[in-house]
Each structure stands twice: as C-alpha cells, then as structure tokens.
Amino acid sequence: MKTIRFLAVGAAVALASLEGATVKDREGAVRKDKATMENDARWIYNDIDRGFAEARRTGKPLLVVLRCVPCLSCVGLDAEVLNDRTLQPLLDLFVCVRLINANAIDLTRFQFDYDLSFTTMFFNGDGTVYGRYGSWVHQVDPEARETIGYRRALEGALALHRGYPGNREALEGKQGSPTPFRTPVEIPELAKKYGRELNWGGQVVQSCVHCHQVGEALRAHARGRGEPVPEERIYPMPAPETIGLSLAPDHPARVTRVAAGSAAAEAGFQPGDEIAFLGGQPLISIADFAWALHRAPAEGLVRAVIQRSGLVVPATIPLSPGWRTKSDISRRVGTWSMRAMALGGLVLADLDDAARAERGLGREGLALFVKGLGNYGQHGAAKKAGLLKDDVIVALDGMTARLSEGDVIGRLLQKRKPGEVIDVTVRRGAERVSFKLPMQ
Image (cartoon, rainbow, N blue to C red; front, side):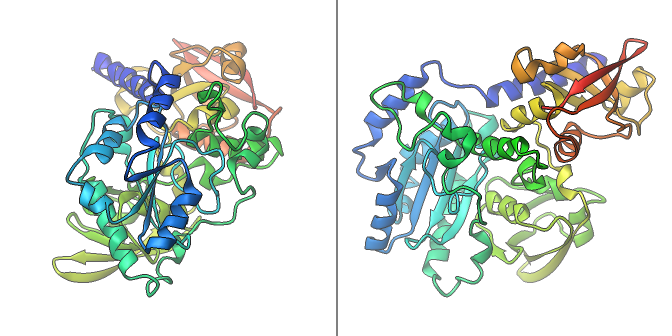
C-alpha cells in the first residue's frame, strides 16, 4: 500500500509537468501555425478587430479560439476543431477567429480560465458575451479528441444568438467585470518585457504573452503593492467539484455525481439533472458553469434552474464562507508562481489517512508532504531555508489543523506580505525540525 500511495504522488508530479510541457521546437510550431492558418478560408488569423467587424457586417455570432500553440495540452482538441468535418457546418454559422497570443486582448471582454491552453469565447458582434468553452479533460490529456462537448457549446451559442437581444438581461452575468488594466501589456509586470505586437521578424515566441501570464501578472501586481491577492484570483474559475458536483464532459451541465454533505447535496441536485441556468446565466458548457461560480459571492445563495425528467426544478445552493478554498488548484500552471510567493517553491500534498497512520500522525492535524521543491530564484527559497523533499509539514505560520496545499497558499497570500518570515515545522523521519521561510 505504501508503494501505491507514493506512485500516486509521482503520477501527480508527472501530471503537473505535462500541463506545463511544450513542443520541442516552439518557434517552429508558431511559425508553422501562421503559415498554415493566415490565409485559411474559414479562420481570421490573430486579428480580433477584423473578427468583430465581420460579425457586425454579416450578423453572424463571433467565435474566438485562444490557443497557446507551443503548449502540448489540448493539441488533440485543437486539431479536431480545425479538421473535424462534422463540426464544419456549425463553424460555418460563425465568424471564426484564431488568436495565438494574449498581448493586446481587451481584458474587459476576454475574461476566461487563463490557465487553459485552448479556450473559446462566443460573442455578438456588439461585444456581448454569449458564453465560454474550456476543457480540463483535454488540458490534461493531449491525445483527447472528443468534440461532442464543443459541439454542444456551439449549438448553445447559436441558440442564444437567435434569441438576442431579447435575452440580453439573462446574459448580463456572462459579461466581464471591471479590470485595473485594459490589456495585458499595460500590467506593469508584463509591460517591462512585452509589446502589443508579436515579433515575427525576430524571436516570436519570446514576444508572446501566454494566457496564463495574465493571471500571474495580476496576482504579482497586487503582491508587489503589498495588497492581499483577491480570493477569486487565487481560486479562479472554480470547478463544479468545488461545490460537490461532477458534470459529464459531453453535455453543457449534466450532473453525474453529487458528493455527500456538499453544498450541491444540500441544494437537492441529483444525478441526471441538466442545469440550464446558474446564477441567472444560461449555460452552454462546463466553462460557463465555472464562470458563474467565479462570479458568485464569497458567501450566500446562488440560484439554479434544473431540467429533471421533463420538469423545471428550481434549486438554491448555499455557499458558506471560504467555499472557494475547496477548489483544487494543484494542477493549474498559474499555481506554480503562487507556490513561489507563499511557499518558496514547495509542492505539497495532504497525506491520506493511511499514510498519516504509518507516520504516527493524527487525521485532523496538518500533514503536508513535500513532494517537490524548486532550485532557483524565488522557487529555491524553501530549499535555501533548509527544507527537503519528503519532509512532512506539521505546522506552518501557526496553522496546525488539516489543510490542503491550496488552503495554505490562499491564507498566506491574503495574510502575509513579501519580506515577512514565517515559522515552519516538519517531521523528518522521527524528528521535528523548525525553519524560517521568507514570503515573496
């Protein structure tokens, strides 16, 4: 059993590595994409202004794919969207734009899950957002090619377009919220290095703002100003599991499982339910569900409308204080930079009950296994302080109750400022060893 548990930890590390993996020839991949797509009959290449103008001219809805070409994640889905003949009749009903960099996107419009390497946003030509699509199934498996969920999103966006502007009020919650910066390259942390345009005459990859850098830069900006990082930036786009729901990947929002004792269970959700609305917003994808949670209050009630056995059933989801901290952020590429800020580069995993028993640790106490740590710069701070791989953290800045890595990161980024030093106690074999860890 001990071997199996450590294999699981190794698999988690491998998964994290995969999510940040890139193709071998990143420069060549980007230039090949441009050569292939810039004169494509269907796709407008890297020109969002032209896309909106064409949508207004034709009256068609606008579909914008944001694709990080060098990333291995979602390559299967990307290929299918470009080449699957069964999707082509639906795509023909849209003005289609392919964006391969985030340098100058309008952040008041383009608010989505920045940690995904393939996202689609659907708009009216006037800029109104119809919905979002993004898949964590495809993000973690480059070979995944299923497109039925994407098809459902296309169909849903077309239905909303047919109902526009009569449904404008229902779409209000799907629109972006105010932002401190209009474009990514106006964020000081990115403005130092990037311009609005890609450097096609030089090293184009080095000139490209990746979507995940947007979230990272916004967090770093708050951190640099000595401000707490907002909770919604630490736990962005919460997965349905955060409130106890599992949803089928091939439907907009069909419930497959309800976790016992969860907020979803308290609200009365059942397997087989089709969630039509959440927070007043019509859902066309799981990403839409995540967006509705992203915009949900820190505590209070969120209303849903369910289709169940031909009936329309209302539901009310109770959100208790701190509900966002249940979001699993361990696999997000953006969490890597937060690990540097809060943990000095540590990668942590809560030990399961069996592993705790083997070490003589209780079920309710803090027991975060150090499954990895960085070596350089901010990511090497924990190693420099003396922490080692396979240590088990049992006390951290006064926290001794059982918490996840995400819980700890969130608490530190909201409570501690750069330059402060916290106390860390670990179990190393049979010994308890204490360290001082700087916040960054």
